[in-house]
Image (cartoon, rainbow, N blue to C red; front, side):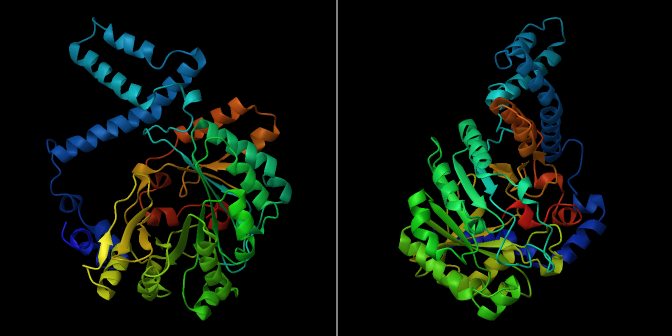
Amino acid sequence: MPRGAGVRAVLAAAAATRRPVAAAAATARSAPAAAAAPWRSRGHPAVVAAARAHVVRSFASSRLEALRGRLAEDGAAPLATFRAAAEGASSAPSSTTLAQREMAARLDAMLPTVRAAKPLTDSFGREHTYLRISLTERCNLRCRYCMPAEGVTLSEASHLLTSEEIVRLAALFVQAGVTKIRLTGGEPLVRRDAIDICAQLAALPGLQGLGITTNGLVLSRRLPRLRAAGVTGLNISLDTLDAKKFAALTRRQGFERVLKSIDDAVAEGIPSVKVNVVVMKGVNEEEVGDFVEMTRTKPVDVRFIEYMPFGENAWTDARFYSYADMLHDVVDRFSVDEVERLTDDAHDTSKGYRLRGAAGRFGFITSMSEHFCGGCNRLRLTADGHIKVCLFGTEEVSLRDAMRAGASDAQLLDIVGAAVGKKHFKLGGNADMYEIASGDNRPMILIGG
């Protein structure tokens, strides 16, 4: 492929998105349906495909749940009874029998075993192999996109998961198919037993990766112990390369310590070191190029994150800066031939890029402008023990309460399976970032970053 070809294709596709988000949204809302979709007609292939997908999703979300429950109660082989009924339905019209057979085949592919054996597969066939566990709601920073200036009401200590409860739940998830765990917060490293928890989790048979998302303030002096405990990845949050702006964004000091933690993590030999940058219009969008420049000499992965709405973080689309805007800024500064588009994994949340010859790479997490829900493999466990199947959803189920009421491991997995089975296809059931903003989700610090 010619140099810059991949980037040019992305820029061409994104060109129309460069107008202000608010104006684009207003246009979309006011435009007549026919004008917004002139192809709408009963026989158009796009309509047929959309209708077919809707039928499959509707069937999966309601009928499949009932079927799962019946199979779990009966202990039957996966869909054998349903398939046999479809094959033997000779008295039914041929078209009906064919439809039954086709649906049986679809269900067989989606549900190869009963729910008890596949608790981490949702109704859309997505297998969840990545668990994010919040160790604490406490933090030593007060980032503006994470919490309001006055802070948030924290849970009582007795309501938070103990280290034993965290390890028990993590072990269950790993036994069910999770291969990667990331510890978040709050700031996970302010929890005194964080490193001990890391060591216990890293020892779980079947776990392939253990990461931590941290603000870096107290990271440097803990690095040797973290590496010895089995930590394989660090995501360090840093939204600006300006010390004064850092203090304004975080409402705290510590800029130099965070910069040092990045260099120290690389020097310590942590296999994966990433820098998370939340980009906000009118705040730090002019620094995107400076962060990309950092990757020339530092073997880190800088990830630019679109500003997302959460409870009490004062989100507004006036502060929203899209992936397309950021990519244009990068190309304007460097050149389309110098920027290389990378191949992403099916479950990557970041669209990867690299400056040719650079030591590191950079990418864009496009949750708002181009969601990646179709490949989602993530689940979340909050510090107070609730399973959250989507970052943007408000539905939660307390595994803590079930554990403390004496639930067995099998019962806990059944609760997990029920929660995963009700996961929405995208954005927690919301249409877009405006609907997310109007919802009643937790502040990010209480979810786990």
